[in-house]
Length: 221
View (tube, rainbow, N blue to C red):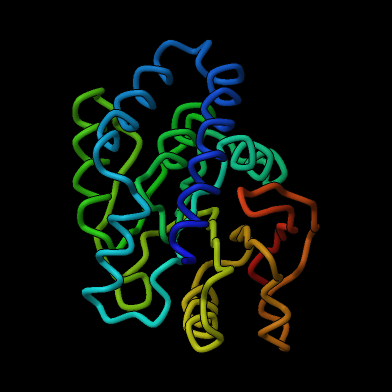
């Protein structure tokens, strides 16, 4: 029953989001071409079903963890983090890569997306090659096990992570240089790390398909 409810909920959101994205961002013809090209690859391939099939093969307990950050929310968080062209943004769990393309295009920065689902990475790489997008890269890997590239800004949508996984992420984040900016959704890192490794800079409301929550900007100390 849950998958049926999720299907119609996300289908309705996708329709609303499509209109919102067209009105806000498709005035830029280059981004319009990139985003439309990416979305066309999923006309007969629902990302939710792809994710569910992958998680089922991995024998995951929860098969319905896939979700996407709206592009308008990416824009808001990028502005709050003061992302500039010299930044290298790392998105942990980038899904089909829509946010990676968005940040790279509108903020003119280097963006790397790490994603464990091979089909998402394959299709994103194809779009990047097709449209000659040079400032994006995609890595198919388990973010808990792979080496992370040098980055100045890291985006973590960790709402569905277990506590053990959050602690693993925190240990990796601690290895980054002082001043590295980290954007997390739903909770600040200091809720899980009681030391002085991170400094909370600000918190602000953000919108997702499932409702509103808070995002947190923090830095490595």
